Image (tube, rainbow, N blue to C red; front, side, top):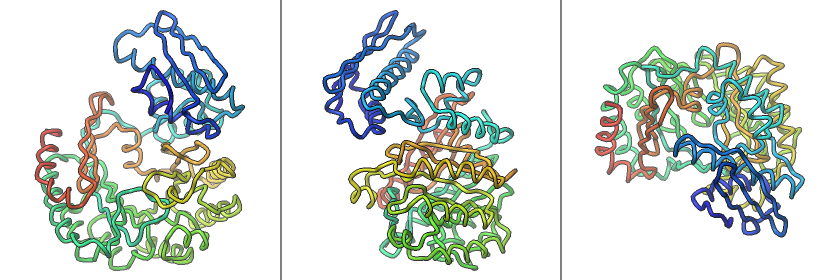
Length: 449
């Protein structure tokens, strides 16, 4: 634990420290002193630092924001000096760097570079994302997105920290689908104008054909972008694809994560790279756009392994390729078995992906960051021209209302001009969701009406 006179910011300081694994939190002290010139004193082991900033907040909200910013910035500057290590995103620790760029639109590049010490190629990445979002990014849209959660998978991947149940062991699937359909019907009056639909999880296509069709029939056929996660090739069948086509689905996620068979076995997948390729072609046979996820930094993979995976994905030409950086969270098997996450070749992998995808016509159009990411990097979605996924932009930039249904689903109502966001989160546990579903419906009606 960090010693500080700002205990409410302890978790924020630990986020900064996460990129400097050579420093133990207990060896760090940070104290903030307000005044016309704010002073932040940082001690790391037996070395002391002092930083000063012009400090004239206009209100209490700005006071909290500046206190947090200057404290985290001071800690970062002290850690860089103490360790000799600098991070690609500098002192930025937030999930959505693009959101900060939109908020500082006139001088965001200068702010990122000179104040937060973000390196040039990350600034260029943000700039490319903002350009790709032109015509999609919107504030105060009357349309809303619909998200439906299916928290079931055939098996649990070793890197996964989501609340996802192995479908063969789940005894309440019938009851869950019944309650979910009731919630979807109750949500329809809240979505008078649809912008996008996304069914995620989990692996929605792990449901039986009967359950799957009941679900899509309840949602109905809509002439909007309509995405379903079908990440596991062992669950993709002609029957499922025909159901999707019948109900107006436009986009399918086929997520290999890697095209290395040795790694697929290591992370708990019951299929091969060849299976992914075969099912990809089957999905394209039905005319769907495809989103494809890859992970840089998977345990045991070399740069050449990742290079081969990326080149294989590009050769298939899916409309979207998202490159995730491995993130070890509590609850994942890899987190439990891995003591320390090293940068290794991850920086090289991420930069290779950026350059190679760009050369092949893929432009970055959304990005986000998470805690405990290898090398303190990011997740980036790339798309061919005109093939950006609207839902991905909306969920990451948080400018559009999302009406969400199901266990672990989070509904979001966005204030005017992208203002304060109000959230309602459903329970993660299946039984708790089933029991609380009537109350969740009431809470959503109150929020969106």
